[in-house]
Image 1 (cartoon, one colour):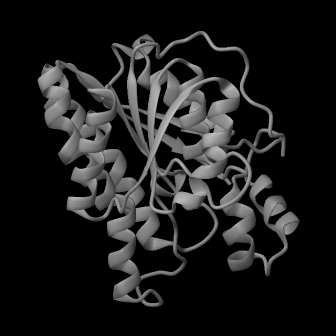
Image 2 (cartoon, one colour):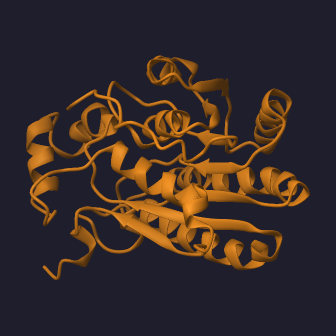
Amino acid sequence: MSAALFQPSARRLDGKVALVTGAGSVGPGWGNGRAIAVRFAQEGAQVFGVDRDSDRLAETVARVAEAGGVLATATCDVTDSESVAAMVQACIARFGRIDVLVNNVGGSARGGPVEMSEAVWDAQVDHNLKSVFLSCKHVLPHMVEQGGGAIVNLASTSGLRWTGSAQIAYASTKAAVIQFSRVLAVQYAGQRIRVNTVVPGQLHTPMVESRLAGQRAGGDVEALLAQRQARIPLPFMGDGRDSAAAALFLASDEARFVTGTEIVVDGGMSVRCD
């Protein structure tokens, strides 16, 4: 996987402050959160990047520095309201405002309702959905007070259709993120706060190699990549940089008349009939 940075910037986020959750990654390469933090910084945003594991932010910090951007970091458990409130206050203390919120935290667990324990179900709901609720809960008052903002939530094509394995909690919570975003968009449109969703498909991210290959292909990364590629009409697999490009558009003023909708980033997978 190429580690190259993005193409030269048009500075589409100059003067904006962006809070990005899940800005680290479980391994080297372009996860969604890392790519979004780097791309936003390259486009002129002052980025406040958070993750629950500070070690995961190290490569993000290095790549933002390489891009000549501005990044402050913090650790946060986005499933805990007090921790999220503290994160938001830290961003305000550092940069004075929050113009863009990107909710990127998420993860899957295998199984349907019979196989999955209640504990795993509850953890998935907290991780994938409550985290979005809490970040919006604590950021929205600041956006209302400052007269506007943009929220970009990350969902998944698993929230739209079957994507190859039973992961009932992940699919349900990611579908909920999409509807959560639509409802929020209408509720806050009058306050000039736009809310949209990026819906990534089966991208080649560090999580594929560090976690999913062990779960689904006996540790064989190439076998898992081949399985995933077979579902994608385009003859290549995207990565977090593709999600970042969609998030950048939705966060920028180019999307000033876009709210309550989704950009699907999946190489055509979700519109296949077979």
